[in-house]
Length: 324
Image 1 (cartoon, rainbow, N blue to C red):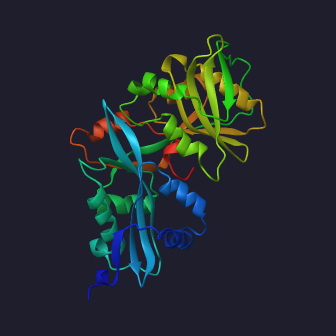
Image 2: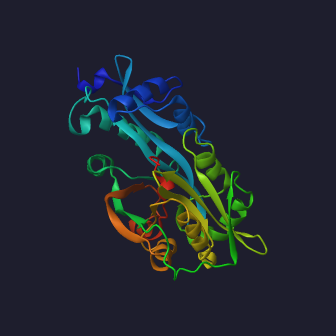
Image 3: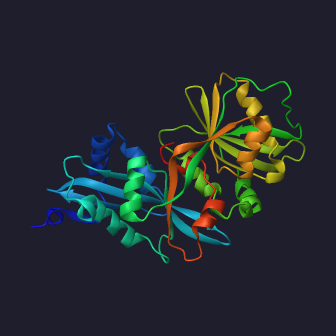
């Protein structure tokens, strides 16, 4: 009997979640709650896409993709953020391409991904998983993740905010977010569709993390010109997500000055290096950018989506990484 024949490989079935959470704790060393799993998978409006391997009725391998609607040029596609690729340390199941985990993951890709299925997958794997993915699954490196950090506790006196704008923290995500997305969507050639329904599921409905939503408005007319989602961890503000009209980027200065009036040490963001947002953060606010040691990786299944276009046009933020 071949080693692979000792395992059952199949798509996720209802009830697998207990075994998946047990495997997660074994592999990563900390627990995930059932509420978190349900939010991440079951409550995703686009469905559950996961694959498992079982040995003696126990789930020993798992991989999944979080489906999300993307704007690709002038059309809408469904993409995957690759998440929770894990294997029980006692059940390696063969070597090379016959390894149980590798076979399982390739079946996952074959079943769910392709030009008429999930047409783009991406992720931010650690070094070991990145190399495995490039060798075994066809991952293609886009570029190192670009992070930006503001370390000063107060802005320099020369920093002037634009009094045309006001910043309002809101517990609810305003309906105008959809109208704003329609205005700014052509600023991105490849991006998650950052509309109200996406923001509600990703941030407002999270069962364990409290995110804060800030609306950037014109002071007089009250028009929404931008929004920012943040998370606070140990006196560091993480810019999780944002959408701002490029002609109103200066409204962000008002927000940053508000942040730094509080007991905050740092502000951190992820943005594509040459995006208008990153350039504004660096040149107008004083953020310091650097290339991280880990990469954005992808697999494109669309014939008209080249790696050059991905490198030039892919827009990402910290919110595109499921760890945050």
